[in-house]
Amino acid sequence: MGRDQMLLRSLLFVPAANGRALEKSDGLPADGLIYDLEDSVAPEAKDEARERLREHLGKSRFAGIRIVRVNPLVLREGTEDLLMARGAGVDAVLLPKVEGADALNEAARALDEMDAPAKLRLWAMIETPRGILKAEKIARKGVRGRLSAFVVGPNDIRLATNVRPGPERTELLPWLMQIVLAAKANGIDVLDGVYGDFRDAEGFARECDAGRRMGFDGKTLIHPSQIAPANAAFGPSDAEIAEAERIAAAFERPENADRGVIQIDGRMIERLHLTEARRVLAQRDAIVARSATN
Ligand code: 1VU
Image 1: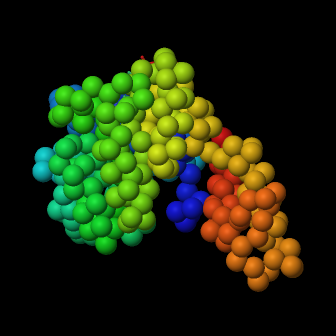
Image 2 (image 1 turned 90 degrees about the vertical axis):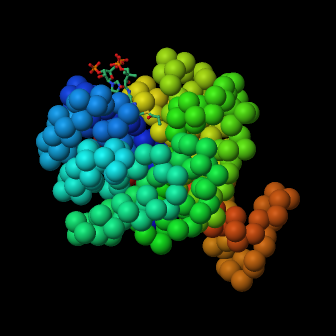
């Protein structure tokens, strides 16, 4: 799928050490699953979790995109995770705590040596002060390799900085926008961080809405109950679809064929709005197609 059609509204972390969660994840309506071998797996359980995940991926029928979060590649576990992910044919490998382009280059080189297909992409977690400061350089250099998305890691940011974000995340806004901007400047996707209080539906919906307004393409999740609200928040609303259809129809009229700018109900509409409208309609079509696979 091209970038514009790829659905990234909801990406659920699934702890690979939890057999019940793995089993359940197959039938969930998330746009993607991030199988976690890193933070959610205890050090002594890493090898067992990897084997469990390998077996699961071999028989999984999940219809969305599949990502494996590996351990740092400086560890034996990280290299073995990467090998397993390559063999399982997943869509992307998520690297933790990326702080420079070197980590991406190293992972890309390792994947090349494993003869991994070019469609196997790298995603990078930006979750440390240095990672945030270097986000633009990481994105710029990473896209020459396999990098296709940033994922914000709020828990590690909090741990490393002592910042205590309130409900509106005001304290984090400059850092979050810096990550979004670095991603957009280099044409990669960017996913908002997890919301830990999974029983707080109101707070979660508020954070999703804010995330979409900030330009995030979707949200990473920790619990199945967060999938439907994230899909709703990061998908186009009925009003946005109706507006996109009007704009597309207006530019299709013969009298507007050569016009760069028209008006609809007293509002200036340019061809860039048509581009945006087509993106909304493509996303709508992808959502319909994704729903048919659930
Ligand atoms: O009712 P069932 O037995 O059918 O299933 C339970 C439970 O197994 C399932 N479930 C999940 N399934 C797939 N993926 C998940 N992430 C997941 N979480 C739960 O849903 C049913 C209801 O669960 P529950 O409400 O009883 O909740 P639990 O006590 O089972 O689980 C709560 C936690 C928070 C432990 C669980 O949701 C979880 O482990 N979440 C993911 C944690 C994780 O991956 N952390 C690392 C990534 S976050 C990060 O690093 C920040 C960047």
